[in-house]
Length: 227
Image 1 (cartoon, helix red, strand yellow):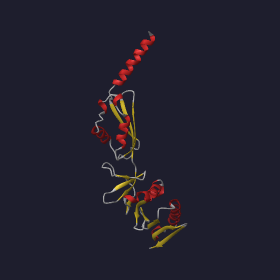
Image 2 (cartoon, one colour):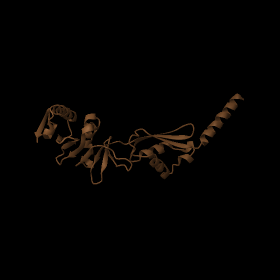
Image 3 (cartoon, one colour):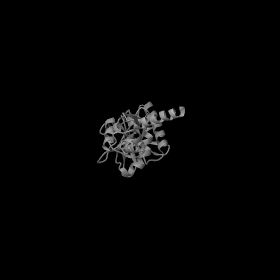
Image 4 (cartoon, one colour):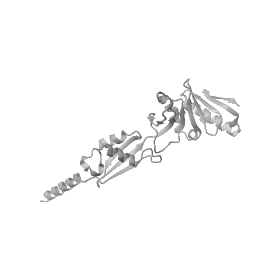
């Protein structure tokens, strides 16, 4: 009898759990300092694809489909969807992160994975501007932009990267009047190490305004052209 009662209660609870209607959708943006995608836009995406979460039973909701649908959005890098025991669907959404803004005929971002990312209607990122760069140059320029983004000093100073026709790059710096000639995208760490040493010495000697061009293309040397 005890086993029968236990089985009945288990079956009853299981049936009730299967029949439970999802009552709420909880969205969490893991990098919510800059919202390139809003909660309203996510809900609209679900509705347009006929996933009306609040009217679907727990056992009929295909979590993999919902995850794939969310990750198909052009602003989403990753999505993790789960269900709670009290009938709520949760989704942790990681948005794509732009590293640079490519000034093409139709501007777009370069994201942290090295891919083309559309501009957002909700937020404009404060990132370096990339000029002379086309979509086919993204793989080339990505290591340079990625390095700058991960360096506090460079992030604070770099405002623009320009790709010349010869495939070499020049960098514009905030509040500094000279052009920084970087050259080809190679020896990135060495070149910026040399530049930081030059910057500290010129700052100490109060000579940052004395140059019109600073060239990092010559190994351990920093070649400067005075105004």
